[in-house]
Length: 229
Image (cartoon, rainbow, N blue to C red):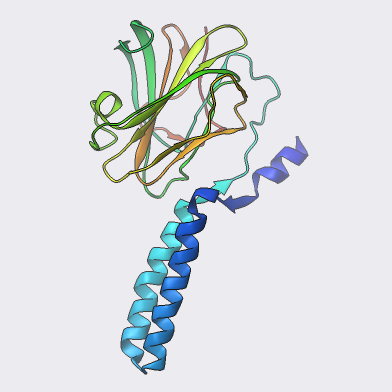
């Protein structure tokens, strides 16, 4: 357990941000040097202050903490697949795959949250399906059905199917999904990444025990959001 806690404190940058951060740094540095050589001191300091701040915000966005679920027993446990805030806890009619009532728990990620996504349960990836769509604000109810999304169905060791849906938001323009059909998956592993504000929905069997409340902040791979019946 001590080793897990030590690893939990380590933070790295996500590989999805490598090109953005590299070229951004090169561009900012080149323009700053040009302004300095032209002896444009006031524009130089204004540029450094504004774009330096923007760059730090982008660096924060691409944080990728190394996390491990603190408990050894994960059977029946559903963890938060993302950092953010609980915006939906309700029973819905799921017509695409289950064709019955499901408990949906949704997490909204602001641009300031870590945007790496984790698998919510242990199991095997049943299928992965990507669908293009609109870019409504991620916290709106219609975003789950109408926005661009990537669906990952996971079958737990107990035979329960759990759907995890990555949803693009108003600013998000790229959903990355690492899950592959037929592969084993574990809650400490990354399911994918979504750039900028977005949302992740988890569809569970009705009767699952909800362990969070509306408006509660979540930490991906750490916060238990539900327990399967």
